[in-house]
Image (cartoon, rainbow, N blue to C red; front, side, top):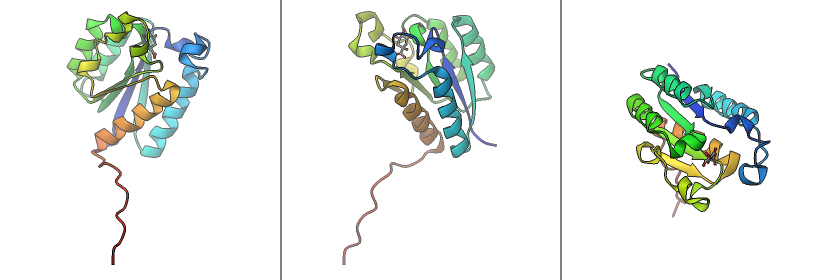
Length: 158
Ligand code: DQA
């Protein structure tokens, strides 16, 4: 059975591409989703998406994922900074999780520095734009597969 990754996108992320492009870039969520689907196909991973502006819907989606997903990629949007409920849902699902943000949340307003998700996540990618979402996805799959660090081949000495 192939591994299953759930990608969760929270408040206002459906507006990517149109929303504050100077902060979040011009790549739409649809393009990000297609790029993730392409990578998932190439890596033989099953992927599903939950996109909502409603905290409770995301909590429900995570609850349904309990026992049926191997990893989570999550950009909770503004819920990052407010939601104990999402944090608790992630703890309940208890699988490797990568938190991702398009903008660098540490280089913005003070209130964005606090994440309720970061310390229960395996890792965080922030500030690398849409590319960072793909890097986070690849890193999560590497983690799930236990892929070793890609050392350079050592040169033959004679
Ligand atoms: C965001 C950062 C959050 O602070 C903000 O509320 C968002 C988007 C990001 O991807 O940079 O909606 O998660």
